[in-house]
Image (cartoon, rainbow, N blue to C red; front, side, top):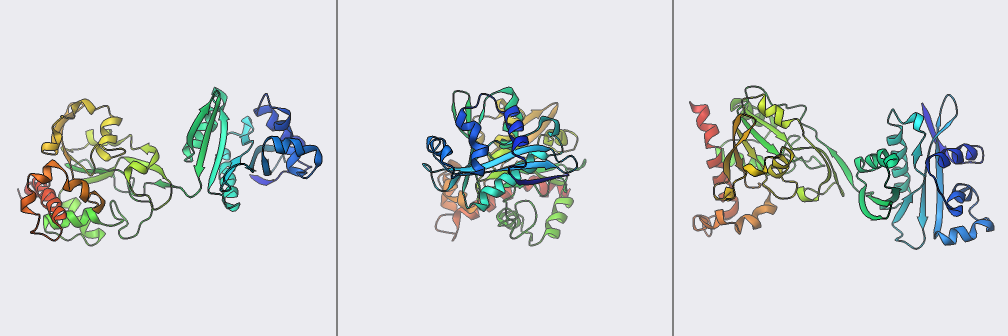
Length: 378
């Protein structure tokens, strides 16, 4: 067990000892910051505060409950020559004998929450580019800190405090089964779930288009699951976890710190999957791009794939048909309206349907899923 409490005169000596063990080669002003935080108005620190342009600083210690030993240190400080929405992480460290049980994560969570309590929008930090600090850098990146620059040995990170971490809600609950023949493979669901608590459920555009193309009803989860089971269709995504600047972000290209679904290849090989439907193509963080990049299959993508949006690849000794679906989102309609595949048949839709691009997508899905429906009839 542990507690986190404010730095005080009673724990200052232990905090200094820990800080000095972790961080070497400090300047006089850097060494004084802990003492300074306890007596910031003292005249003897005036030059140091001015030199570092610090207007506010506070520190906290993590204390092991049984031994009362200081095992962690963190702080937040504000520079008065920078954006008022920003603050900095200071002297974040855990005693090397206690770097287990997610104590570093708990101390970082505390630090992030403290920055939010100070009404800041950005938390910054800098660390050293050396082997001993790599575990800390991995922790920062896991928590959506983004590297912004490097200066000699210094690496700078920042965290947008409005951002969120999205962890996949459905992959483990709906695994690929041995007898599945088809796989619908996407990226990851939105952070906020509003309409359907399932894959592609936030606005239900995918299920709406698929339902219209197959003249079916997918107005609830039971209908969808029955359809998938009846046609031996599995459904999964390429991203297990990612960061977003805030919970409203839905574009694949704006996701970062991706944790990919490394096991999807083995799941495909250990099943009867013969066709993969990718819900997005080869743009940044799109489903097909992540899949082909992760498993080094890029050389198998034909240059003319856009002519039919389908082609075959070999994974191990297994032949797989790949079908690149048109994005179901309304935001994709402008791009589709300018595509060659649409312009070839534009006259069949333009001026005839109220939403010509959407109807084109419905017909496209109908064609691409024909092999699924025909297989079930036989």
